[in-house]
Each structure stands twice: as structure tokens, then as C-alpha cells.
Image 1 (tube, one colour):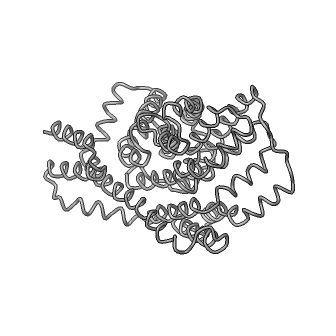
Image 2: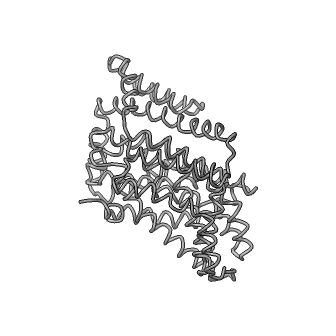
Image 3: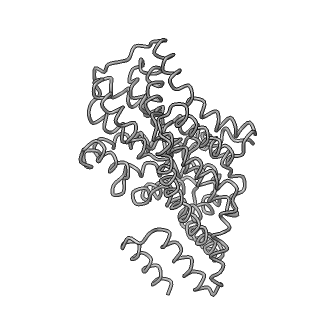
Length: 427
């Protein structure tokens, strides 16, 4: 009976049924099969709305839409170029840093490719960087900020885990701290790779100028304090995470609409509608996934999976290697948000059984899944870049695979060196 149900759900997935419908159908079927009153579904779905930090998701999303709609990307690139453009491979480092910072706040790698690609791709080519390198860089850089606060995947992971028995101590604040050093590692490895590439080419450098740096900093004077509003407010105890999200959205609104005036007032309803549509779709998937998760916990499915895996995998290191392979495979077929709400409830009990810290698991998850944005057949960033730069997808695959190898190396280091993720956490 259950095999037929599973096959039916797989068939529905191939037919293109929305993810939240699949999750809700699976939860309804599971509770019905075990003769549990179906009213429990509504209870489980409503329980997610009582999570205090849930407000952070729509507020950070709105802030990201506001920043991406204005001219923040141009001001950010100008500041980073004035600071780093004089270095060997300086423009490449500028691209990595600017894209990472922009993705961290917008929460969408595709937005980064569209917003910054128009600035960086021509600049890289004019400075003498190879075309394949320029294409690969701007396509890859869109996912670099997913481990930097206030990353939406880190927030979502924390919310999902807090609904589970193993979720004690996995706060958003801890996830933000845990993502800092892995992000620095990724940017450092990519910068070294860029330096190795440009050694074989003559690339134009931007001479350092105090005047240009001062002018760039003054132009971006209202946006540069934004990380302090988020992180400073949270870790100083002035704001809770949800309050920091609301403050970030208000700050972005005032700066982009009233100070810089990049966004006309008449455009605000459209932006709010787009942000609400995006986050509303995510929240309904999250609610349905939580209902399914509670059914799986009631049936001890994670425990049974752990027993099965434990019988064949005895080493923690081997488990981590298999976890990396699984997450890379998932990244080729699922977007990171869907993968989080579906797979974390299954993987977390197994990971803790092998002694993996739940915070470390979240960083491993995002570090591996971000590579999925560049992997066929889904590879969302490949298709966005293909549309943006009018290049065939196969050319972008060829351009990005060296960058993917660097990201894979970083993901392995993050996986096997937990100190990178846990070193800043309070003991």
C-alpha cells in the first residue's frame, strides 16, 4: 500500500504538481493511513505561525527587494573596486566580495547575477580577463553570499530545526556566526584561483586613489552601515532577530526611497507584492513540510533510517562523505529552500547520531547546496546567466566547472574541519 502511495507521489512530481501540494498530500495520506484524525494537519500547520523568528523571513526578503531595485549594486561595486582594484586579480576579488555581500542581503543569487552582472562582466572583459573566466565568475558569484548573514537559507534552516527534538541551541544568531569563517574561506580560495588564472594574462589594474575611495565611501555612506544595523543590533542585544529584520527593512525603505530616491513611491506596492508572493510560496511549503515532518517523527522514520545507515556505515568520516555526495545530487534537482524543508528533518537525526553538531550540519548543507545552483539539470544560475548574457547554457557549464571545483574543495574543508563553523560559537 505504502509503496503504491510513494509511486503515486513520484508520478505527481513528474507531472509538475506544486511542491506544497505534494507535501500536503503526503502528510494527509500518512496520517490517514495510520488512522490519525486529519484535523491534526491544520494544528501542525498553524503551529509554525507561532515561531517568533518567522517574521525575519518576510522582513529580510522585503529589504532584499528594496536593495536590488535601487542602485545599491553600483555603489557597492564602486566601493569594493576603490578598496581592492589595485591588487593583482583585484577586479575579480572585487566581483567576489561585492556579489557575496549583495547576495547576503537580497537572498537571491539570480538577482545578483542580473543586478551586478551588467556591471562586472563588461568591466572584466575590458580589463583583459579571459571571456570564459569572466562568464564563469559572474555566474558563480551569485551564490557566494548564502553563508553570510542575514542569509535566508540559514534563517530557514534554523526555523526548521527548532521544530525538531534535536534543534536545541540552533538559533539564528548561532547560524549567522557559524557562516562567517566558511564564507571567508570560500572567498579566499576563489581569489587564489583568480590570481593563478590572471598570472597568464595581462589585466588592467585600477590604481589606488584616496580621492576615489573617499568619494565612493561618501556615495555609499547610507548603505555601508546596514550590516552594523543587522549584526550589531542582534549581538549587542538591542534587537531580537525578528526586530533586526524589521529594522533592516525600514532602514532600506528610508534609504532607497527617501534619501537616494532610487525607488519612486508608486513602485513600492509592486515590490511589496513581489516580495510577499515569493515569501508566501516559501511559507506554505514550510508549513506543509512541517506537517509531514511531524508524521515522520511520529512513525520514527528518521530513527529507522539512522538504524539502516548505521548498519552499513560505521565511520563518521564516511557518513560525512556520503552526506556531501547526497547534497550535491540533491542540488542538481532541488532548489535550496525545498531541499531544506524536505531533507533536514530526515538528515538531522542521522547526523547527530554520528556526532555532527546541528549548527555544523546547517553550514555543510548550505555549502554543498549552493553548488547545486551551478549544476545541470536544474542549475538555476546557469539559466539566469544564459538569459542575461545571451550565451548557451553549455558554454556557461564549461565556464563554471573550474569555479565549481574550487567551491567543492571549500565544501569538503568546511565538512571535515568543524572548527571553521563552530569556532565563534559560545562554549
